[in-house]
Each structure stands twice: as C-alpha cells, then as structure tokens.
Length: 261
Image 1 (cartoon, rainbow, N blue to C red):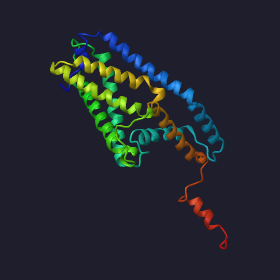
Image 2 (image 1 turned 135 degrees about the vertical axis):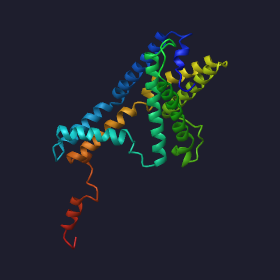
Image 3 (image 1 turned 45 degrees about the vertical axis):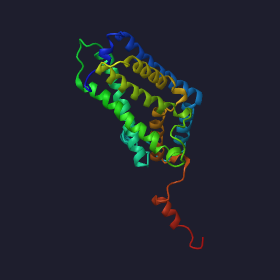
Image 4 (image 1 turned 30 degrees about the vertical axis):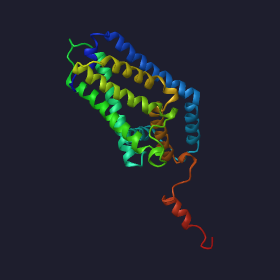
C-alpha cells in the first residue's frame, strides 16, 4: 500500500486534468502570495537597500568565484542542514519537516502529472516518497508543536493555543495528516475516503493560499538573508556590526592601547 499512487485510483472519480489544474493553481497561489508579501512588507526593497549599503562600506572586493562559493556554502549549511538553529532538537524537527514537505510535494507533482491513471504504472519510489514525506512532516511538525515550541516548553502555555503566525505549521500538519488518512482509507476500501480527501484539499488550499499571512514565504527569505550575511562577512562590512572579540585585529588593537588606559 505504501508504494502505490493514491491519485491514480482517485482518477476513477476525478479527472486527471482537474487534479493537474489544481496543482498548477496552488503553484500560482504560492508565487503570487510570495510576490504580494514582498511588495506589501517591502522586503525586497529593504534587502537590496541593505545589500547596497553594505557593499559601499565593504573593505574587500568579492569576486564572482568567491560569490559563487558563498552561495554554495549557504545552500550546503544554512539551507541543507539548517545550521542557524542552535537547539539540536529544533534543528532535527525542522529538517524532518522540511525534507518531508519537499519529498511529499515533489512526489505529488510527479504522480499527478506523470502517472495520473492506473493504466500508467507508477514506480514504487514515488509512492514511498509520498507516504514517507507525509510521515516525516507529521513527526517533525507534531514534535515541534507539542514539545519544542517556546511558548509551550518554556512558558507553559497550552499547545492548543495558536495565532495567525501558526497558520503555516497547522495547515501543513493538517495537509500531511489528512492526506495519509485519505490514502490509507482509500486503499483499504473502507468508507469515509471522500470526507478525508475533502479535508486534505481544504488543508492544502489553506496552506498554499495563505502565503501572505503565514510563514510560508520565510523559506525563500531566510536563504537570501543567510547569503547576504556571508557576503557581508567576506567583504568586511559585517552588516555595520563591530568585529567579533576573538578576531586577531581586535586583540591587536587592544595590545596597542597605552598601559595606563
């Protein structure tokens, strides 16, 4: 069951064209929502103004090769391993959720567009990735929501308390949870598959359609901010911050101070 394509069986009642149109619409909503978020919050303007200011204050030139190297380092460290998280548990939960989400979304797109009907057998790997991705989202997301969240773990608030900023994680968990339940119920032939599929679609629409009001767009902003930070350190501008105390130039300046200072 965990190697099958649930969308192929669904094609008996819903046209593959309808499913494909829905996926395209969700992509459009994410792109449009992100652009709206950038314009409304003026994130792009702030980013480029800050970049220009830092570049003007830089003390060392950063060439194309070094810029490429910094971009690769950003992808390998901040993006691929979420190194910005100092808390090991939160980092693991984030990685589970991130890679699970990517696996689930990619597998969904491949199965809906590449193997939408039973007549075209779906390679088992895509079914495995779809189920495994949803399970990873649930493992990382529920662990974060009920155990790791600061207002729950440190402040003792109820895990059932939520705000507008929680739309992303809650809709993501709902999408993965209802998707798994729908697929299992449908494969077993039990009643209720239609209900859970409807809940799955509602949750997914909420996830991809509320980008301007959730933290969805942060997945695009955070890598850009991490890259800018690396460039600022490389060109010497350090985002207008003083050099760290453990830098040799700082100790050298301290040794040059008069003894009676």
